[in-house]
Image (cartoon, rainbow, N blue to C red):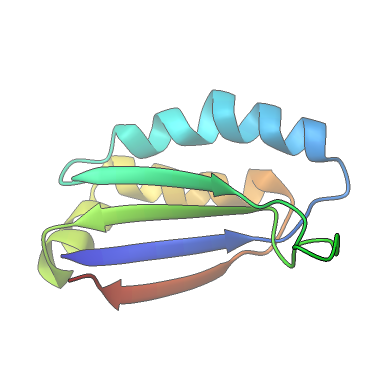
Length: 99
């Protein structure tokens, strides 16, 4: 299994970001063919009360690297990638093999 992890920094307007992310971006992700599962984690303050380094983490799961490449090359995958610019933050993206 291949996981595409997207780490979103805390936006200037958290409420606006969350509204758009939940209402528009997540539904686009669920339309991507070949996506096997998706999870979103909202980060909380650390044990010492410190602010988290990131606001959200999205994990998109695909059968393998070829499936991920094929999925992101579809019209739906391209629409999802293009919509990222509407979020107003620059995410960190990581691809990994999940056991």
